[in-house]
Amino acid sequence: IFYDNFYLFFAIFIFCDIYVFTVFDVIHFTKKKTTPYHQNPSLTKTHCTEIPDPKPIQYQMTCSEHQVYKRCETCAKTCSNPNPKCPTPCAMGCFCEEGYVQSPNGQCVKLEDCPKAEVMVGPIAHDYQEPSIEDCAPDEEYFSCGWCEPSCSNPSPSCPIKVCTRGCLCRPHLLRHHSGHCVEAKDCYPQKCKALNEEYVCRYGCELRCDTRACKRPRTCVLGCHCKIGLLRDTATGVCVTRDKCSNNIDRTNRTVDFKN
Image (cartoon, rainbow, N blue to C red; front, side, top):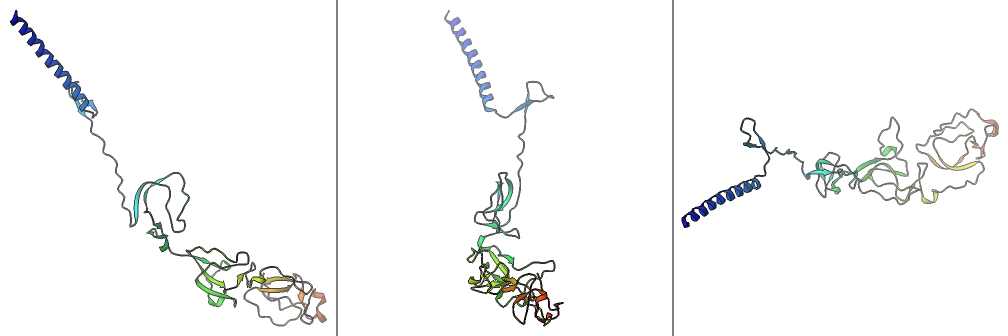
């Protein structure tokens, strides 16, 4: 009886050991293998082959000096707009690193190294040419890189640091009148002329007169008291009159007119 029980116990122990360890190995193998598998049709149904992981797509981009690659940047900072209001959508690419902005030639530079913008002053026409020293009026001065010009409407302008004004500017202590003339501050505001039929304006060209004397046409507008539109200056009396009121009716064709509006 002892031997029969011993052999029975030994058989149960061997069976349990094989079953338990077999089940444990299956569970352990299942937990350890996390890579997805699929059945290979060329093999039996119990054999599986491993699916290779797809290689990640890598974007190779070489950035220039003082640039960094960013996967999501809304917009670039530039010399003309160092603090832009960027839209919501972003883009990836090379952008200037912190403390640098993009210059007009595409390079990233410090803000203080940005080239100055040039602002041309004066009227612009189809045949416009850059003003020179000879084109400046006596109360103007030519600057290749000057300040932003004060005017009657804005006598103390706040000049941008990176703006360079090039052209004929009013001399110091003078202001640009709305008519284009350089005047003192006291002459900025409208004045009343003492004589009848006159108005305080800035006019181009020769003033209409009754006589035929030659007139040297000024290159800029002349600020002062001028005859109102439609009247002529009677040089004999100095007053502004209609054509039929000219002294002795001298040359009513008025050949001295050289007026530019």
